[in-house]
Length: 267
Image (tube, rainbow, N blue to C red; front, side):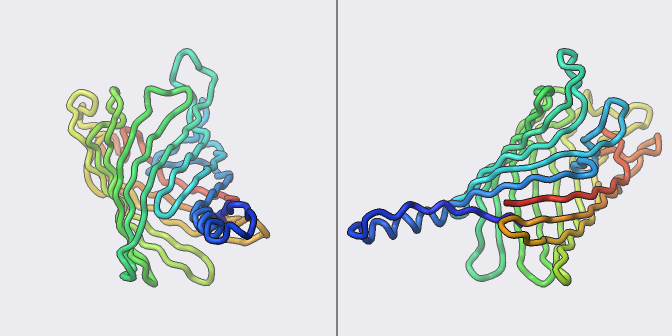
């Protein structure tokens, strides 16, 4: 949960009356929020991202800053990630910056919500991996709230690691019990066919379609004055079919069972 800061228009002379009220109303609709945190590691869709030069996992510092007006919002998010593969920056750690534009709303008082938007993933010291997704999501507010979000890779990369036409689908369930937020997500993937960059060689299929990942999470918001502190624990379990080497691959990378502990501060 993010604690939003509203920026109100300054009151002018009382003779301005209705004009002042209108300015204040518009300012109350505009909110700015942000957060910063640290995690034991950064895992994205089942694949460890915050790794060192030896391939081992390492902690990640992450944060974002967003602005919203009504149902429209824009945000930027960052995290340290993997060692740079660019020979010009061999000793640099890649920093990921994700830029999101979103419009969210609801269908009256039905409890049914929706969101549409796009994400541009960018990588400092690995610009060749920049790619873009669009998404659409539905959710229903209930004691156990279901959600469905479909991500489509709108702009891939030449290597085929992220391919235009990839489809990733998250089906989630969430609820709150005694102040703890619980979540369960199952993910399905359908890769764009690419016989050159995603070829099956000697039975080694690193781009299998199907149910790929199960994630479980628990978190709790703790209000501390003007900030919200949120400790969380998450488990990521790849379930995609094994390839001929016995590994489960997601985005062409062998995915392992991962455990992530994190603490986030929203302001």
